[in-house]
Length: 371
Ligand SMILES: *Cc1c(COP(=O)(O)O)cnc(C)c1O
Figure 1 (cartoon, rainbow, N blue to C red):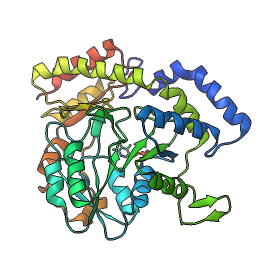
Figure 2 (spheres, helix red, strand yellow):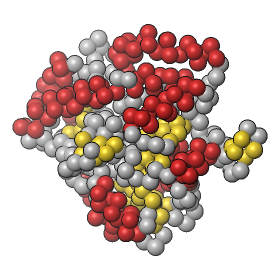
Figure 3 (cartoon, rainbow, N blue to C red):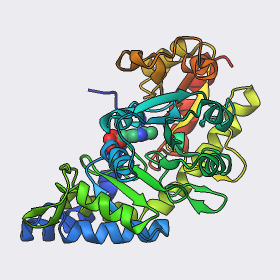
Figure 4 (spheres, protein in one colour):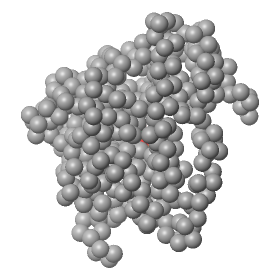
């Protein structure tokens, strides 16, 4: 049992309490219809999410990892291809590359924004490079102008991993709609979270979108006809019902996240702490509030002892993960990420975090952390 005044990293219980009746009402027609897979609730959510993004084509799917793999496969990325991505991300980004038979090539980040370094991407292009996966890490945009220009120069596909960036923008455009495809996760703790696993793939091209829609449902051309070998990566209707309820609140929640992030920055920046510095043109949605501390582990321990949830996103860069030892990128090869991996921590941030709770987090943090 946690102490009564514990402050979790993300307060999903408090959010549920504010939504309970609406969620019950949204579940009722799904349960009454017994239409659980790719049914009317999924179609309704797909329409609503595409409208929120201002995107024309896309499909709900099973999670953010399958969304990435579906996008890559539909864009023709596979065996023998290299895909350049950031070493500073959740492992799913690189897993999806492997799932389609391609090879991840990891590059470093920009120290200010923690987003993938476009110059490092350019330096990593080879004759086998087929695609780029920038990640809008923590909900702040990667340098898409440079990345799209690089892709155009070498005729590469761009898949944006927007799993942490729902409703984030870059130069006024919605993240996930700038590349050939964009992918979202609705894992419960994400800014828009289901009550289980769910994800989404947006595609610029109608034919690619159609391929994705069939690939995620066993390559179905019609009920009993399969014109390609696909997967079962479908979205389910109970998740879609939850997501539609939450989507109606997402803009307001995002605004509150921005206020809380500004409150944290006002307290921590004057004390000399390095925070996320979004690139010009980025309108971040603050999936996580990340700060660097030279005594990170001691700070994490003090926060936890005070009942304050915190996290490290991420302590082990992907090129140093045992799962990717075959990638041949040794310790020391991506120094910016390697350095910050030992310094970063994520403080509690969600729309349900109260200003008083934020004050307490800052008090405990500032009593122990050193820049
Ligand atoms: C959460 C996440 C994913 C994977 O999403 P799942 O829905 O958990 O499969 C992929 N990339 C990033 C950057 C994420 O944060």
